[in-house]
Image 1 (cartoon, rainbow, N blue to C red):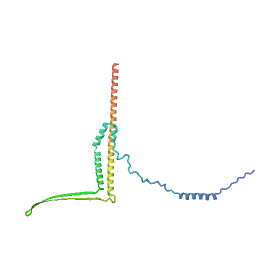
Image 2 (image 1 turned 180 degrees about the vertical axis):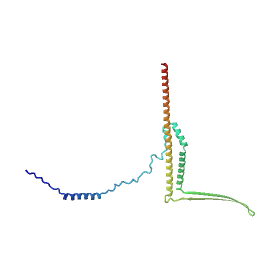
Image 3 (image 1 turned 60 degrees about the vertical axis):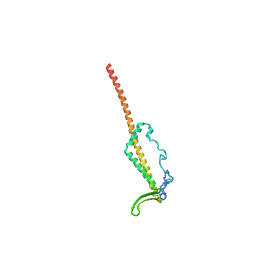
Image 4 (image 1 turned 90 degrees about the vertical axis):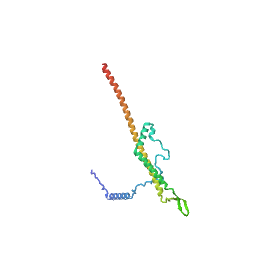
Length: 219
């Protein structure tokens, strides 16, 4: 018997144009895709006016170290704050900023000027004799700047913000100094406890040495 094998040739002539057409279509489709980044919603316009963890209208709380109820720590911090030259300089800058803010606010109100003079004249004449005259004058004026372009208001707002910034800088410096003093106080307490512990160990070792000496003496 004769076995015959039949081979069917692959039709590359039809598959190659079809593959080329599919690749060309994919390139055209990808080139037409919108690759722009997704737009993000803008920031909302109704933002709060103030960003703060506390309310400036509330009464100021007691210094934080008073919560520890330690008279020694209170004395050390108050003494350190009173003798610190950097803090005294910060307080002076704060007072200056407060005065400048008050002066800047005054420009929003009318200016008043008043001036007064008094004169006492005495003349001697052979015809009329001695004559005495007194003259008094008083002038009053006022002026006001119309804030058409907002210059006065902007100046007052800038001075007020400078005052608040100076106040926060002073509070930051005060907090830094008080924290450093409290850290030193904690280290002092630790050294005291270590000293007490060493004194107890020394006392115990001394008694142990006495017992050992008594033991050798009795033996």
